Image (cartoon, rainbow, N blue to C red; front, top):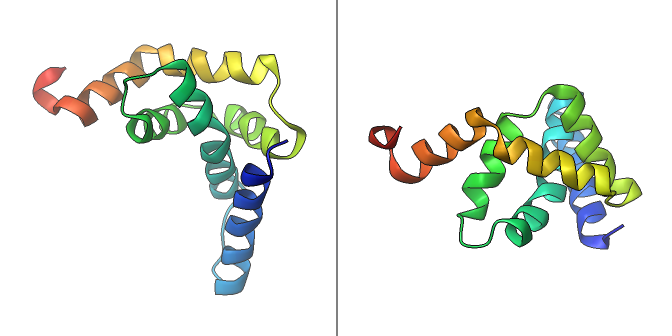
Length: 108
């Protein structure tokens, strides 16, 4: 488990609690999953805009997939979690999202 990812997840939860703003389990999972996904995507897809790709992967993941990815911030990355990230990144909807956000709506 990366200390950086665990710290990020703790910061997200602490910020939500400190602000006394209701935050859903899904929102917490999205932020934790984002922290887990970004470095892996940067490594697996060099040359692509990693922040945009991360956003598209998170936006195109089903809620159970978000929970699985978020869990890696606590348990560490597994081969199946990495495969899941890559699978979501390769989905047509994720590719369309990446193209639209990178090149604009005219690209798709």
